[in-house]
Amino acid sequence: QVQLAESGGGLVQAGGSLRLSCAATVRTFSYYRMGWFRQAPGKEREFVSDIGWSGADTAYADFVMGRFTISRDNAKKTIYLQMNSLKPEDTAIYFCAARPGDGSYYYWGQGTQVTVSS
Image (tube, rainbow, N blue to C red; front, side, top):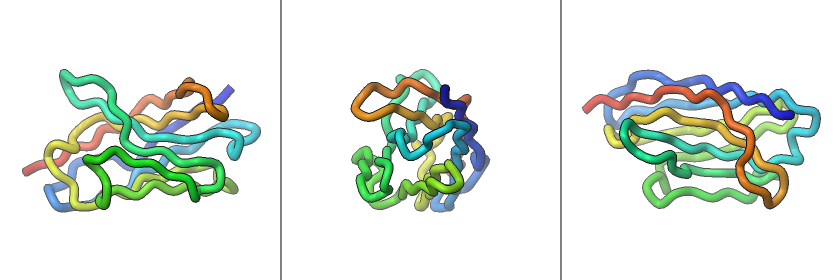
């Protein structure tokens, strides 16, 4: 069983930055690949970024490449998403997710709202 809790969302002006955190309650955090997804109003949930157990294996959606950075701290059982150069189109609820090994993302947090004003 994995419980995930996101924090760090808020309202920011275009060009600004936010840092999201996701704290996991789980026995073996390093066993899970961790990811960030987002869902804007009226749109499907979409992949943003994810990270493997060591932190060296990362992936990003094209629309955040060069602006967002994902990282993890296995000792704290937490992942982060540093978001820079935010755009109004980044406005969405951001969700943290976890998956064991090569499986599908199975565990989800409740989400944190990010709003970027123009």
